[in-house]
Image 1: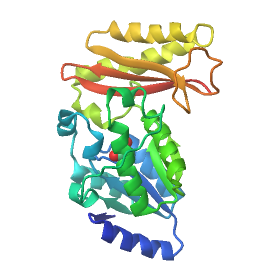
Image 2: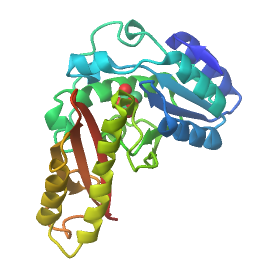
Image 3: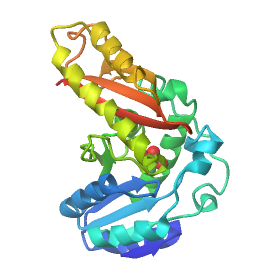
Length: 283
Ligand code: PAF
């Protein structure tokens, strides 16, 4: 696997592959890779001739500077993992390579980017669109792979792809979970062993709420999840939103949309660490 740090070198190499008629898969990441990322890369390797994995801790999507500072940085281990799973190129540019000047572009795809994480982390999805649109331009991939763990992010990126006419196919990949049910996330490394055990309750309770669907109303299911999680010391629900799986608009009845998903953000532990997850109720 080749590690590339400049856009110029990346495009020279990809130009050669393209001229040989090779297909290109892109897996955008912020590093601190884990089994969830590995599954995206493995899928891209299966479905494309060439797989580019970007490793770039994008400052413009962090509205909270301490969150950015706390984010784990593990480039060496990341490259080892990418070699093992068969990636072709790790693209690890500097901030000044990606942002030679401040990015003033504004993206707005409501309600996908204005609700949930969009409401609690103003500017977050704007930063995601800034960097992902740049990566799409550099790589011109046939397919781009995103983990469904960031369910809202995929909905926003789909809107951006449709808006800007990118030819790339967005491939959503299932959440990879620890044995306890906790969704794999780079942030999990910031949890102590005890906090990890606590955090496993999030998915356990969301899964239990499936038993209430569809006999009980959306409001009852919502309140059940929030109450059960908040009863556990060390966990605090920031929001639980039960939404249309495509537009992400809130639903009030199970008949409101063909796909219905519950999306949650929970603060875990003393630091605290923000954890997100989701569960599909319908469709
Ligand atoms: O999901 C992530 O890790 C990031 O939001 C992404 C898509 C790599 C953009 O920085």
